[in-house]
Image (cartoon, rainbow, N blue to C red; front, side):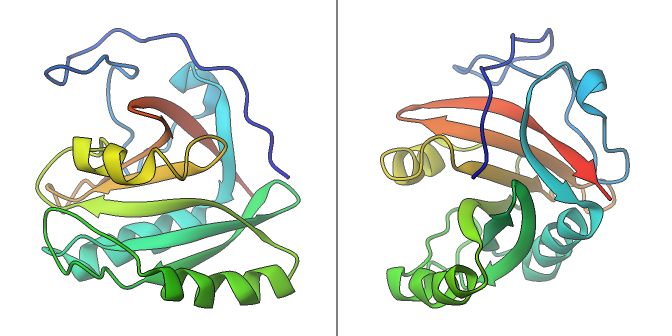
Length: 178
């Protein structure tokens, strides 16, 4: 499976009211930073095509939040699976348990494991909302990762990854591999 390293040190930058900041500036879709540039430990490794697939899904479904699952094999994301947002809402998402199971079975058969989720924020930054934390934290804390794709600016989508640990969110970084 995937191993997750210690939390990264906080970075300097602007504050989201009531929440600590861990990155001075969001990563934009077309300017993926390296691990060293981001100054954080790597939480997940994936290919550029996986990032592009999540961003495309977010842009296609806007103004409704999109959502999906991430599966890995040998420590690297191997599949991005689109899911239906049961809420059909621009403000929240949920994936029906039966749909999750529908996605998990072929992944299990292929020797992959569920490692995380993605969702879009259509009118705000790529930061897990209190609702995201409340819904995902109790069941899908570390080592699961949570990508949030911010598409408020459709020309410059934000791509950020987080661990949700109980009631806390901790920003991580990802590594793009060939």
